Length: 377
Image (cartoon, rainbow, N blue to C red):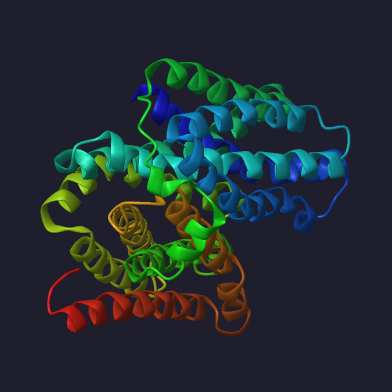
């Protein structure tokens, strides 16, 4: 389990490894802030595309093989990114990283569903989500600290230790799960899952939380720079410490085991809406509390949605996971763009409204399914 969690954490550590050092990259390669930001964009785009390859691959060749292979493959482009002689080469290696990461991501969720007993599946999923949170913090804070001391290349390069160690540990410890003949992972499986209402319901839920979460944390720094707050970039960035709330993942997972993923998802929608409302006043305590609610709701919602994915089908689980993650990142990544348009015109209130809208869509999807079935599906 340790190797599996280390592998999961390495995904987010690598994904967000350049976010905290964008100014240093800009100076090193003489590019604008917008161009430096492409080091994040290309990873997310490649991740969404790669999910369609790795999901069916894990169905056909097994979860363990997919997870271990992807983790091992992630080492080379991580080292390459650290040694990149030009910005274009850096983007190329970041793209390769993005293509490797879905091998762990799309196989990780179905592995949890298949390797653990149903009674502890939620708890295991909670630990899985918590490891993603830890990886995200390491990728931001850890790389920034190393970069400040000995340079950004070392900060990125040392991250290669994580997937390398994870690959070795997982090869020794992960269970070889049987491959069902009904799920010989092809793109036909992915097409079937695109018509699976349970999967699409879980996807809508997860995407709404991701959209809201990304929107809030992409533009709150701009708000903190303005009156009445007037914080500088360093002080404003401390708001990312709220990510530590993701450490509640195991407890969230246990709650999901007791009440079901749909009820947890709806509860998280309410919590996120309250958080958005609390963030509206020009008060720092209210803003921080509101963002804390949004953060906690995001991790509750993501845990719930991923449990919904595992329960949506007994076959083509890798393909189902690929559908979920490609749409999750594709739709959710708009949270870094559409709220920006609202911010330019209406300020923070516009950002909050886009979040309310996304949460409302997910709420309608969940409640309509309950109304049609007369019970939770």
